[in-house]
Length: 492
Ligand SMILES: [Cu+2]
Image 1 (cartoon, rainbow, N blue to C red):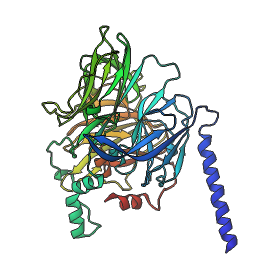
Image 2 (image 1 turned 90 degrees about the horizontal axis):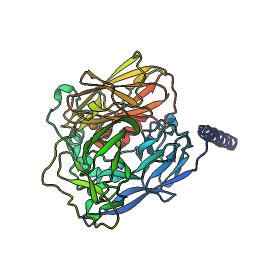
Image 3 (image 1 turned 180 degrees about the vertical axis):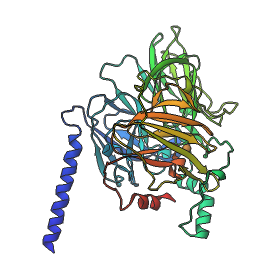
Image 4 (image 1 turned 60 degrees about the vertical axis):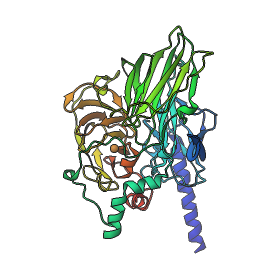
């Protein structure tokens, strides 16, 4: 008996060391410093009230994770919270095993444990890291991630990291959204599932399922406004990141004229603007010229469907910062895809024959708060399949009453049509699909794996609008006795 136990222990040690070697091999002959990220529980002050949230702390003292294109990513995540979790590198073209999605590409990191991520960084631009477990992002478990190009940066830079904030406990929010489901399951048994037929959907437009207490920029409200010193006459690069759980923003640059140069980390043909929409999980890079006469320049983001505002202020030296109210007089409508139609990728995909067309119908049942792709509520076995080397086209068809910012992991896609109107659009990792809208994207299947594809509204994803893009022939370990079982246990 003792011999058998010893044998299994040796086998386990051997297999662990093989796994470890493989992981580091991904970054063989690649340089770059290693970074330690600590996820902690902490408190923040909002409207003179304290609230418990999560925070990701970087060991080099920066308030964001910074790496350089061509270097090794080389990040260790230490989970110092009391809950299992994992961090996903949003927008990164990473090897599947390093993608940080709980139960899809790894087991969650238990409380008190660490997990290493190693791969070569093949891109630059504005990204972010966030928890890919449950509703942790709503409690601020996210951080900006800036990938610098190999050449030196050209302009002073300012990050504006937008989040939505609620004092409410997320479990209570979830139970409130699911109260009809929970009541029915109690009555009919825990195996009961609501119908997800598209015919049943109310088409009433709805902008957010949660009433927020505030919006944050760099984890602060406007009552303790962040101000940044800039030089009169300088060009400044603004990196806006929407790390909210379920909020679209209208961003206003005020007196400044913006030159939009990139979306989701990818350069676009520049567009001049002073206001723009930012859907959940999207990013934009904008250049602004600070006027020679100097002054103060508020940059404000208003949540769609609300009169609440967040932001920061740029100022030239020795100028007092005005106070800005967290609320405006009027609430504002939904963000749209009007700007999307005008965007053009700087480096578009080379046109070629589409090898595979996929459909993703986005549907939901508001009565029971379930969301689905092609009528399949996650967890399920209905992956979308592709083969390495194919040019793939996906049609996102929104048959629900809410907008869905759809995100594909491990790839960039190009927007090639909106409602059938073909154009050579931007290259992105997250695209807004408005109610009754069809958005078509293309990409090259060149990163084998089992990739998460989902709505980036935390509550829609958690309610089932999630699927897996599966490369044929790609095999990966299961990180639970069964993925479906693992999700079922934590879902309700
Ligand atoms: Cu959604």
